[in-house]
Length: 302
Image 1 (tube, rainbow, N blue to C red):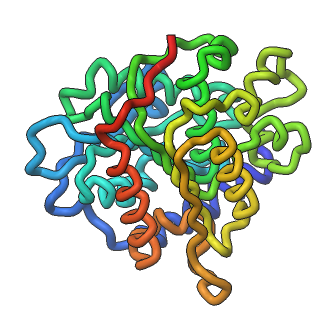
Image 2 (cartoon, one colour; image 1 turned 135 degrees about the vertical axis):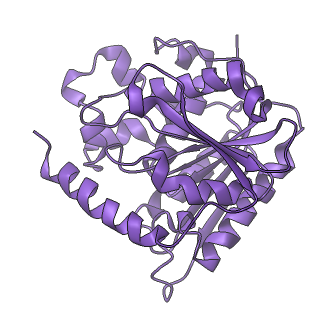
């Protein structure tokens, strides 16, 4: 039986997301490849890929990891945001992953890895450049992005997981309105949504250790654009993550958007492409990405 927390999220957030995207349609300049299977878990292992219609060669590719408190969300509620990124000159990958509480930790990370494995094998068919991958993740997706990229860049950390990471190159990441000190969040119970995903009572010693992304993050973690908003209920997590990245000498930027008067500039506001501030944020993140496309790559450690 689902908890009230999960039931409320899946009901109320879906209503809000439908209202946010009401009236939006696929842009005329975008080609979309929908419902591509990347794994064995049916509808939860489907992805979409978007690019401009005039694209005829592989180009830098953004992989979007959606939010939703680890318990809610699909690629459909991120499609217009992702297509707006594609209009900025990128191929964009938008995918479903298995949700909690039906699928406990580390199911979402396993699916993310399967997406990257799929792109390594089949990406060229869809103009995906696996030498120039970029990642965006918001809210729970920000946590998942930081967690997966720590696995991808630290071979000692990767040993704590059963899956094998592919040989791909992630140039930069945008961490949007997320939480990042995963082990501490689980230990303190400060994020009740996260506890739907991570069952602390059933963690083995290695699984508990595998939550410690802060401990295992190294200077090989990709350059990061850390974003939040004045009215984001998770804004307190942004600056500590930025300072931690700085301490590791990782190129990074911190942006807090909005103001006291702009109540609409709140948690994951950037997904609402009707907002001018969302356009500004997404433009700045894409400009940040362009700085690192073609530079010395971040590669899988072996």
